Image 1: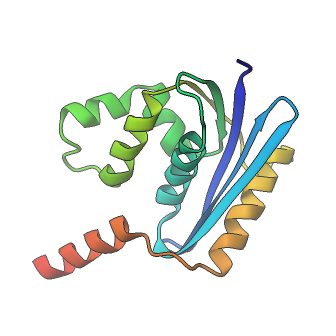
Image 2: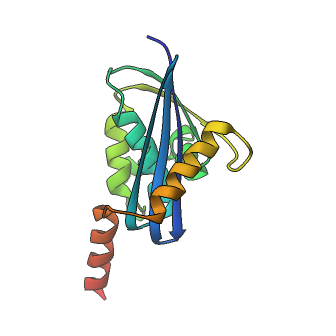
Image 3: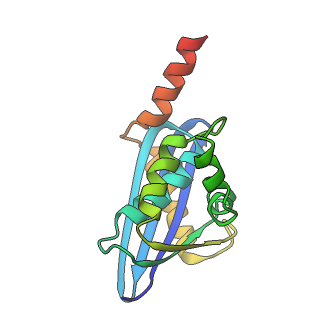
Amino acid sequence: MPQIIIYTDGAASGNPGRGGYGVVLTCGQYRKELSEGFKLTTNNRMELLAVIVGLEALKNLGSDVLVYSDSKYVVDAVEKHWLEGWIQKGFKGKKNSDLWMRFWRIYKRHNVKFNWVKGHDGIALNERCDFLATTAAQSPTNIDTGYENLQSDNNLAL
């Protein structure tokens, strides 16, 4: 089975604010683009959600995957094994645990490696993901329930 390459990007207009993600999956001659916009979210959530959606789009378990992301938050959490420590500690004091748990479930089903790329550096597929993410953020139609529920819970605690 050939290697699958996934480029991802997330965007938020305001942080928090309207947000979106963009994903480009390639495998040999095949290419698929995914994007979605959310009414209220954060940039880090969109960066992570882009990777999740890309991995969830894969049809074959155990795929060899190379993910390109300009998010140090996502790449370092995985490649430096911070995520494993966060899981062991029950995500105590960590944001986005809902997405990290969703990521972990799909990540373990494939052979995934990450490669950090500098954003806005002329890398064609990273630039395409940026365009998809920012376009989706301009006219969001979805609700990031994980983020908005957390905000509601925090407001109730005040």
